[in-house]
Amino acid sequence: MRIDLLLDSRQFGGIEAHVGELAKALTAAGHKVTVIFICDYGPHPLKTTLAQQNLPFICLNGNAASVIKTLGARRPDALHTHGYKAGILGRLAAQLGGFGCCSSYHAGEPGRGRVALYNWVDRMTASTANQIIAVSQKIAAQLPPQTRVVNNFVDAQQTISQGLRIAYVGRLSEEKGPDRFIAAAKQLTTQQWHVYGEGPLRNTLEVSASHNVIFHGSQAMHDHWQHIGLVVMPSRFEGLPLAALEAMARGIPVLASAVGDLPRLIQHNSNGWLIHANTEAAIANTIACNVRQWCALTQQRRNHIQQQAKNTVQAHYSADAVIPQFIHCYQQAATQGARYA
Image 1 (cartoon, one colour):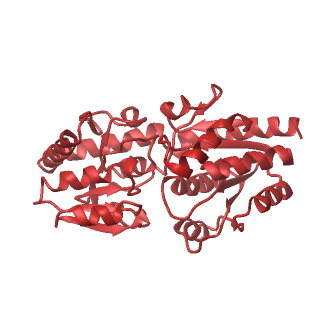
Image 2 (cartoon, helix red, strand yellow):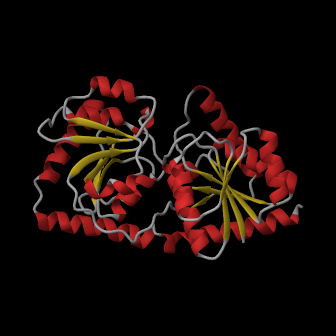
């Protein structure tokens, strides 16, 4: 099949990592895949990754008319949109051009201001897609009843990390809870705490952080996973975060808030740990307590948890497990789109 993956992206995050893995896996399965950036914002980690893997991509000028015109001329068998702008414009282009469209919904939080408005429009127009995909049950509940839940996935063929760093990996924004990570670090200053990511809270977090917190900024994480031993994910809102899967594929357990589909991924005290506290002080205390316990684990117990984390991803969140579901969605969308062409 000819499959176009459409997104609007200024920086690297979960959606971008997902699109990169999807392009690689679909290409390996024999499909012709092109990643389309709605606007060219300059150098971008996903562009670099695609170029290194000889995966084709094109950049448009950000104008809605150019998106509709370009997609109408390409007429892929299936267009797969990611994010609200790509969803709104991609579905319109598919209707006008008479080709199939799948829309994925990755985020569970509503956002604020203009973003909240765009998210609302994106959800209200979801039914114009031929196939609607959500990465968690909670997100699916906000969408039309025909929505399919398809797991995020990662390359599960990874070496188990031998690193020891305690890390936050993700966007520095309120819904992801990096302030909770910073608060917990103040309770355990004998350990260094590492922050990987960028976002609107970075300046505030740096000012409030204790001396034992190191900010690395936005990074291509494949160069850093080997140094990490535990990922802390204290989110207020989530779907199924790709960073959690990427960590666990490398045997790195995740200590996470029990939100979104994280409780479906993490079995407490088996392949990771869940945070059930419901006040900010209690959450910080729980994180600090669990980090202390993790640091005190015997090597045998740590090895067991690492292997359990890796096994979970291999069984349920690998390309082999998930890609056939995407291909089925594309086939359905292509048939439905052609029907109305």
